[in-house]
Structures are given as structure tokens and as C-alpha cells.
Length: 443
Image (cartoon, rainbow, N blue to C red; front, side):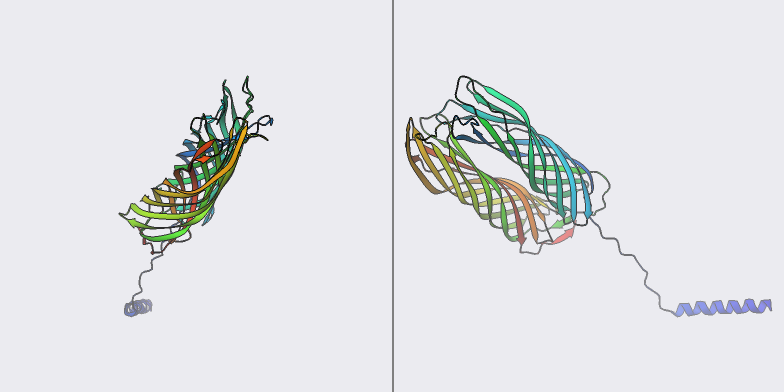
């Protein structure tokens, strides 16, 4: 009996094996790989460089001397930064950031028709800010704001009187940051800084007691190193070639400087305001990494300032300079380096601006008539920035700085004649649509 059952089991086993051999073979099952993401979370440190623009306005707080002194200076910025990001959503990043740097701003101004000389110099600046941004993978567009601290030396002469103080205030701005590969990122960031007024300076043996209010515009270009393991694949390769168009806007400062032949000093008006307009251009992808292009833009600009001259304005003696910019346009070339995720570029070309200058001159105790001139001036523009994809492949955003010098307007003949030079500092962002479908692949 035992041998019988063993035989039956052997037969059944052989039958089962033969039946299985007759069934069709199943395809092997492979689990799909997990989608690769870009994680911005973690601690980072970095370094930056760039430029700053000061907008200083000095007045006599006692009211003994009417009018004011406007002067604008620009200089280099370099420093270090550290921060922490939390990516709390696939597309949203929050963070805290602090930085400290050297800011070399200062401009020695001899006041028009006076013996007074003023200056406002900066040595260091620090900020502590929050950040909130939108990420579309290897790029991050963000807004930022918080506190600012600066060491400023105000001086007046002759003889020399000066005061050095650490002033505090606020700062806000925006920027874009892009991954370069590994743990490295690059960013372009704009900050507006206001830290209030310095001390009142009483110049001995004179009637001058100026006090200066300080505001600054900063443009920073930097690299950061993000610590910690981050799981992401290679950066996408992008073809930037083709036509594009979009809107561009931001803030700006018009540095207008008036001088008169035979009269010492200068009279300034640093108009500040906002700009918005349209741009269009074409890119050529010269290689996987290098891009060249041509771009034009036309913008309305709301920059105007009327400044009564310090110590030359009263009921019987008037000196006043007014400036207003109506629009500007540029036609520029662009050369850029593509990381795949972003385009880091420099740009330069021609610039045109419609400006109106108003002048009322004073000579001794006699005030002259108010005269004005509206003219389209031409000159050059130069700058740079970072452009990154936003909400898909066709739409991009950018943060950039643009300097424009459009030269001197007409000589305005009041009781005292005046010639005014015009320079612009523009801090802009744009939203651009690319008409050609970008070929996005992996290296």
C-alpha cells in the first residue's frame, strides 16, 4: 500500500509538471523606478558679490537753511551668507537667511554755490531675513524680507565734522536660485534697504547743520553650498533657441547731476520709482552650454523728483532742479552660460530715454524764471542676471540689474544756466514666454 501511494504521488507530480510546461510563460515583472525629485531642504553657506546704489538726501532738521542735497553713489559689494531651507511642499520652500558683507559706497559732493562738502560712506552691512519661494525642480524663485544693519559714516566740511554709527532698519526683495550640479547653487538677488537717518552734523563757524537720510538698492550674485544628501538626478539639458516675449518691471533710480560753468559744486536729484514694460528677443543655442541672443524692450517709468537746492531757496532766492523720466528703451546683445536649469548671462547695447529737466536758477539775491526741456536722449546700457524656467518649460522668470547712461540734456538758461547728466540704475524682474518648444532632456 505504501508503495502504491508513493507511486500515485510521483505520477501526479509528473502530470503537474507537464501541465505547467504547456502554460504560456508570464513576462517578468519590474517595479517602475521612483520619480526623481529636487530637495532644497537643509543648511547652506555661500559667498556673493555685486553692487550697491545709495540714495542719500541731506536736509537741515533745524529749519535754519531750506532745501536739501541729493546725491547718489555706487560701489562694490562682497560678503558671505548662511541659511536653512524647509521644503514643506513639492513646490514650496521656506527658509531663514543671514548675511554680512563689505559695502564700498561713498560719494563726496561739493554743494552747488556753497562751500559745504558732504559725504556718506558705508563699510559693512548685515541682514537677517525670511524667504518664501516656489520651486519647479532645480530652480527656486522667491521673495525675502527682514531686518538690516549698516555701519555708516556721515561727514560734512569745512572744517571736517563726521559721525560713524551702526544704523538698523528693514530690507525686502526677490531673487532666483538654481542648482549647478552636486550640492552647488547660483543665485541673483535684489534687496532694497532703508536704515533711516544719521546724526545731525554741526559744522563749526558756519551756518550748516546737515542730516542725511539713507536708502540703498543692492544687487547680489552668489553661489551657495547645500549640505546633506539630496536625491536628485542630473540637471535637465535645455535648448534656449527661438523667439520669446514677455513683461518686465521693477524699481529704479535716476541719478541726475546738474553743473554750471564757472560755479563750484553740483546740484542733484535722485528720483526713484517703478517701471513696467514689454520685451522681446531671440536666442541661439551655440552649444549645450553657451547661448547668444538679441533683446529689445520698451518700458514706462515713473521717476520724478523736484529738489529745492540747499541754502539757495527762500521767499526771494530760489534754486530748484526737477527731473522726470517718461519712458526708456534698450536694444542689447546677450551672452549666457546654460546650466540646463537656468541661463546665467551678461548683456550690453544701446539705450534711449525720454526725460524732462526743470530748472530755476538763483544769482545773489535774484531768482530767475523757471525753464524746462523735454528730450529723448541716447546712450548705452549694460548689466546681467539669471533666467530660470517657471511653471513649465515655456515660461521663464529672471532677476537682473541694468545700468543706463544717456548723457546730458539741453543747457537750461535761467538766471544761472544748468546742464544735467542722466544715469539710471534699474533692478528688474520679468516673466517671459518662449514660442519654440524647448527640447528638455538629460545629459
